[in-house]
Image (cartoon, rainbow, N blue to C red; front, top):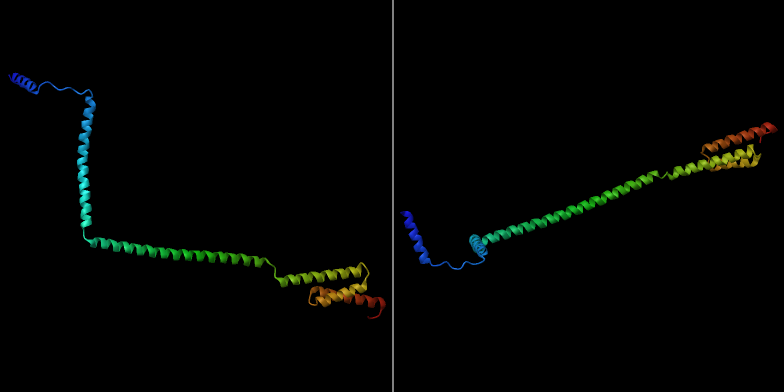
Length: 194
C-alpha cells in the first residue's frame, strides 16, 4: 500500500513538473564550471573576511595614539645613534689596526736592516786585517829579496818600511828580528860592527 502511494505521488510530481527541458550537450563542462564557482565562492568568503580584518587592523593602527609613534621614533633615533657610535668605534679600531700593522712592518724592516748591518764587517777590523796582510806581504817580499834575489839593501829598506808603517804589528817584530839577523851576519862576516 505504501508503494502505491509513493507511485502516485511520483506520477503527480512528473505531471506538474512537465517535460524535462533540453539537456545541454556539454553537461560535464557545465557541472565542472558550477563546481569551480562554488569552490571560488567558498574560498573567497574567508579571504574577504581576512581582508576586512587586515583593513580594520590598519585603521585601528592609524587611529592609535601618536605616543606609540613617538616611542618608535625615539627607539629608532636611539638605534641610529648606536649605529653611528659603532661606526665610530669601528673606524677608530681600524685606524688602530692599521697603525699596529704599520709599526710591525717598520719593526720587521728595522730588524732586517740590523741583520744586514751585523753581517757587514767592522771597518776598523777590516782595515786592521788589510794592514796586517800588507805588512805580511812586505815582509815576505823582503825575505825573498834577501834570501833568493840577493838584494840586501832593498830587503833592509823594506824591513824598515814595515817597521815605520806598522810599528805595533807582529810583522814589525819579525822585520826587527830579521834586521838584527842581517846585522849579526854582516858583523860575523866582516868582523866589524855596522
